[in-house]
Image 1 (spheres, helix red, strand yellow):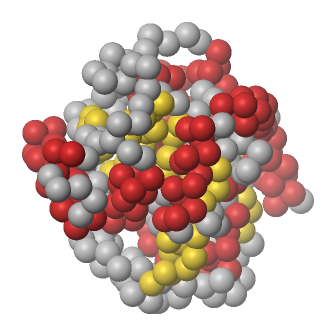
Image 2 (cartoon, rainbow, N blue to C red):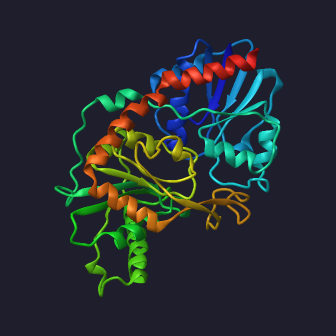
Image 3 (spheres, one colour):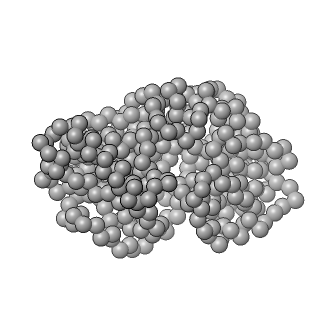
Length: 375
């Protein structure tokens, strides 16, 4: 088969990483592959040579085209064989967005998780078949040695860490509340927050996050002075891919309690490094982490409320997402901190499960779906 992949693999963000990894999984299949870039953001990275050379490939005809884009950008071109949309969803009840009409145009949809699948089919019974194709990863990343990051006040302590954008969906608020109400300031435990916000300098972001943390602690009213609280460790500056891997390898337990995630690559990295992730139940992260590899925090559906949404018809009050039970989150954090014997079992299970997400394994799933479609 001749396949054309159109995606944001030149972007310097999660979409770009996922697109590059999907391309590498497709390279493990027996099909001929050509790629073309699309741009959905304003931050670009240097394209790896093994991917860039695929831009020079072209075929007289194609048996399938894969559009790795946001659903409102999906289109249909009958000249390109089977039209496949590869996209992500993070909220339920999408009927009132432009996404459902666009998804209905294509021959088939690919999504990375069961939660993403459910978001579509619980929104509207569209005729488009949907397959679950997880985001693959390079297993070799976890076989290398990494120099630990040198961060003040993290030696001889148990270090929770999270990697988030500074927006409502990532739900940093509940994590900060849980950390400060569960752990006494004198306990040898830290919360490290690697944070990013497009368009902000590190200094601007640091100021914003400090104000955010101050307001949470002021309203919790646990201690007489803000200085009496444990101080979170903030990393607001941009770091390299290598430094991000070192970050995962340095700390102890990764936490992501987002309201919605279609998959989440940092959770996959964390499990590969043995960092026993704590994640929100009923989100795409649960395709990566179960109670056998980490901790899944109870959650319930909640009406979406979000300032400054990325699209005008997305994240409206008509949609639903998953809100963690903060009390259960506190208990899971305490268990991760206290029960080192259990963590060793979870680490072992997680490192075994990571093989499921290799380029080769995901490539086999892709090949199976593509071959069935062609028959």
